[in-house]
Image (cartoon, rainbow, N blue to C red; front, side):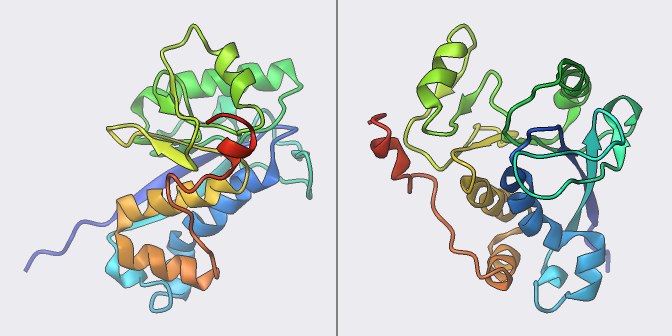
Length: 217
């Protein structure tokens, strides 16, 4: 009897001063339940024994100095962007306000280097179907008018046809995106078990009242 191959997805969490905490912490809270360590601690509760993969996160930033998000505590990165030489399978990019030119340059170089060969990009929206924060939707759409992006106004989250790039709406929508992404790579049972462990209520792709609230439809 041959055993099912086991995959460990390496996930880069891209940090910078001014990042929105919940944009990365929400998805990490859910996806991190499938980490190698947590799977060992709670295999039965999280149905980890039903999956053939784990997700291990590495926190990246411009330097190893503490990151100061828009709100919440400071966070210590694991590696600097320029020093990260491994190929990451998943890249998670939170929203926020980048106010440091060096940090932005370093992050962009990392994405240019890693993006083409990454299996999945979460919250990215370059050159594909995408959605974004509904209060900023019109501004972002106008600022990207020269890019080949099809913006979806009424959506909690959007995935490209090849399922490589996933983008979410406002801050809390990142957890809905993470849920559907996790279901895509692990299956429904383990994902429901993880969401249940967090007592998480999941919103579907089109369950988005904020599009109408902001006059987008």
